[in-house]
Length: 76
Image 1 (tube, rainbow, N blue to C red):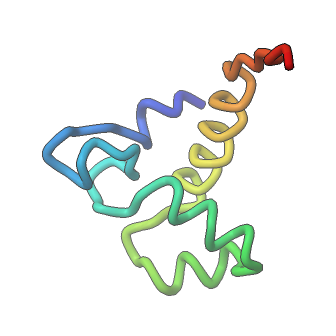
Image 2: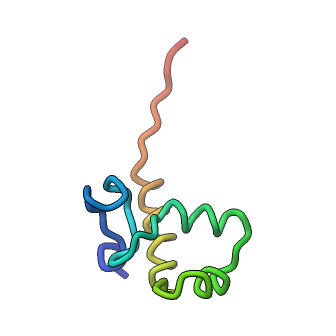
């Protein structure tokens, strides 16, 4: 699955936050709702333009983002 099919970033939409393509649903909002206990089914009911594939792309996007993070120790 290519996340770019489902997730885009446009400076004119939500100030460039990553969103589900064709919507104003921010990736971080979907992640927050999942983390707070909402189920995929609840999200699909609450947001009719959202799809199972888009939710999977959000999770993959989060994993890819964390994988690419670099952590540096700061000497005290």
